[in-house]
Image 1: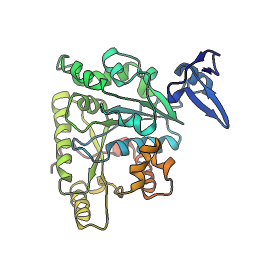
Image 2: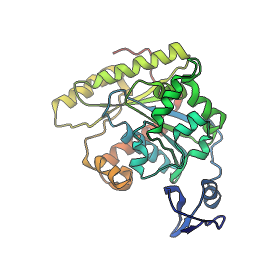
Image 3: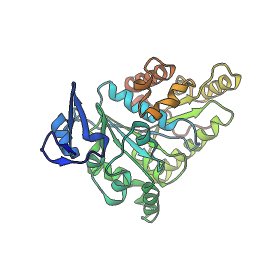
Image 4: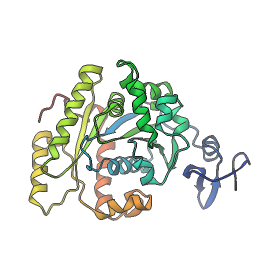
Length: 312
């Protein structure tokens, strides 16, 4: 049993957020409210609307979760308040960071829970809304809603809770499919980052994303900017990888960002429940994601996209 540092209540330690460090002092908290009060996390510094960024590719295995986790963590390391949302029922964000939420995104969507109560503080300036298999049931629930309501549920929940004014960045890790969950993410997002592998089928996933973005704009009336296309698993020794980069650069120009090199440390980090910056700060993976973070925070949202009508 542990004793809550804030309220003195005894409780059983279950969740990552229930332990916090102040210097070398270990503190324990029975509830999120006690943690926020005890660590001074009750309020955030920003008063402006957050940049909402969806990390999406409908093709699987492109490094979406790796990009989402390390992008969010890297921005948080710079002192920005960041919320990372897992929109995939596999729950890989929580598994990668070693965190299990008391409630999940499904509770926000279906039950209408306040996202601020569901968000779990996991690192300095970084909170996470986790997901699990209950998100599959949430998608069924969304499908039963009116067509005019279903794509807007996430945006409605987040706006009602004024989450945008509590964070400076909101990063959404989308699942590898075209479903109502991803439509909710795109209807809420301002910008999309598309991780794409350096192989022959690289452009297939990008075409699907562009088509989905145009459909969202046409049917929902919400324009989403393409912030950037991020080549992943780049091996400069292979001709195929170099040709893939050249093709992407030809279509997206400056919106084709510097590639993330293939790196075993990136694959190892989630098994240690760490970001690449914690696991291997001197690795190529950490260097490449630091570069992506620097790019993101130095580009204004108004400059961060190309027209959704781009064709491939």
